[in-house]
Image (cartoon, rainbow, N blue to C red; front, side, top):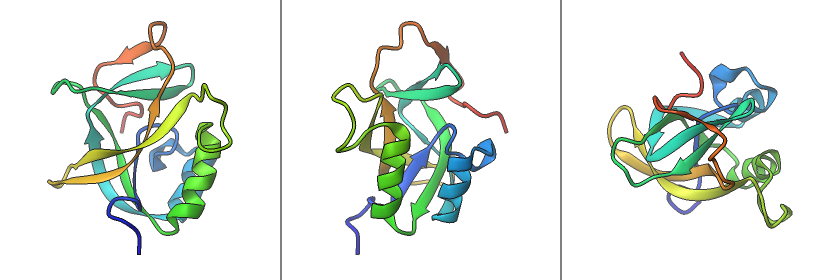
Length: 135
């Protein structure tokens, strides 16, 4: 049994099923969809991928998918490598995996893992609607 939330993951970019990215397909095979969700953050376009930066402003939200990981330890290990963070990452890792409240579109809030962008965003393009992929 896992502590509450440790098998929940919120994704908002290339890891979303709709992206068609190979990593998203791998994640889909290792998780069960819970549904759409959002986090309190600002979304930026960093080259060809997004980066979410935590925010405490009520108008800032990033939209994505919430999944339940079937084998959290194994899946999070390769996701940390994919996102360039974790125990083997350099000190200035681009992303950081943290536990955060995730609002479900169906109602309620769950704690889940989120990869937040850690580098400066002054040159990145802000995505005010909070959606990296248009559905």
